[in-house]
Length: 482
Ligand SMILES: Nc1ncnc2c1ncn2[C@@H]1O[C@H](COP(=O)(O)OP(=O)(O)O)[C@@H](O)[C@H]1O
Ligand SMILES: [Mg+2]
Image (cartoon, rainbow, N blue to C red; front, side, top):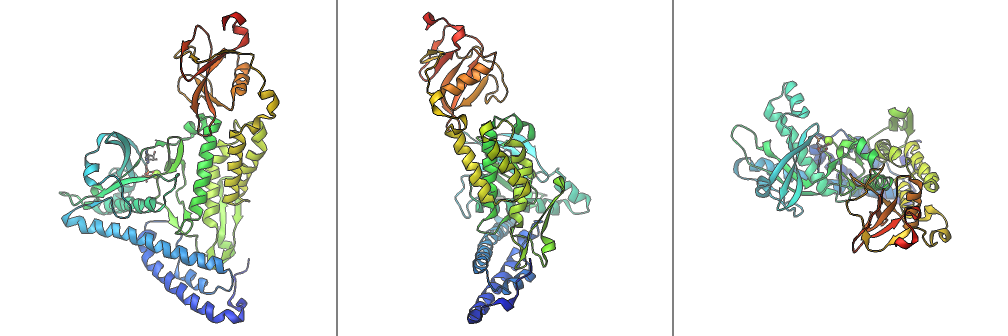
């Protein structure tokens, strides 16, 4: 696509556009200066002066221009917050501490963090070490610099002073605090507090920069593949909603420059982005369409985008979509999907790999899958479903701790616990499984509202239970026994 030229201005609007261009130029120069703090640490694109002059060359796309102006303004605010955090960290070198109370009201301050109990080491990445801790009975995660981690050691091996390396690593945590707080979303880990303490003997002030967040569980391939289809559907919906949100933040689209499963955790079954120290804002700059190609090495596929107003517009969105598909949806969704939902699932998966649909469309399609699943549409017509059961029914009965057996995709570790739309689906499952003698229908519900059942491989006199009903295969009981 050719770059737009000033010659396309509509004559009557020239003066207006010149004024607007001047305002945009001032804003963009401003942001270029203020960007310094984040861009030093990030690999992602931010606006350059060339892009600023390209924005001046606008002749149409008024909406787009206003959007860019707005994003630049918002990014200014984010950058100022971040700088304040950094300045406070420096000021407090001599006389105090910086606590987690600058722009929201996090729960924990330096004192709280110092007094967290039951600290247990959980994991490390490139820069940070993560611990589990306890704050007044609530389990939380604490992130600090991993002083013997790859980041600091590579830095010192390159000849830098240990203190300098520590400071650089600490700044990444400060950046993470700023960004996480600026992006409140269900699928972004919540910051519960932070602390930048004063100096310590022999070490810099940055030695104990700490951030406290919700506690999650690490995400890895094996865990994901062992999940039930319903839980994998939830992860797919989460990642889809997340990239949609990150594609349009008030600060511009977010570039997830280090998109790997390790940067996410699961909190109560919900996927959350946890590591944002490599993130950047704004699509990359360009002067030709050729610079806006997204090379997808793993699939030998190249997606081309236009260079509009000096920016590869939509680049971050497409890149995040492609990576979300590669690391999550493509292998999570198809396997185990109900057959009637397969065409829609395949369409979504192909949208992720060919990048032919917007993030909004993908999110809508996934919502539709969730709806068809939770309403039982995927099971077919209702008439059969309401037929009277031939199973022996024991109302308010259970077989607790008895006749449990392991099965694939169980949502509990020990027994065979699965979710069903209704009693009929539970019977169909049990009928298909030669080991199954019956099932306990519980009052527990999954995230989509489906009923949790426990399959059993034996039967004896059941015990009383207020909220569960026991169903036993007709072949195993005589009519007189129930
Ligand atoms: N909130 C959390 N709860 C539990 N584990 C976490 C949490 N955040 C991160 N982790 C684990 O710690 C690892 C390192 O954290 P991360 O922020 O990714 O650090 P790095 O920037 O060094 O990669 C992650 O891969 C993840 O397994
Ligand atoms: Mg990480």
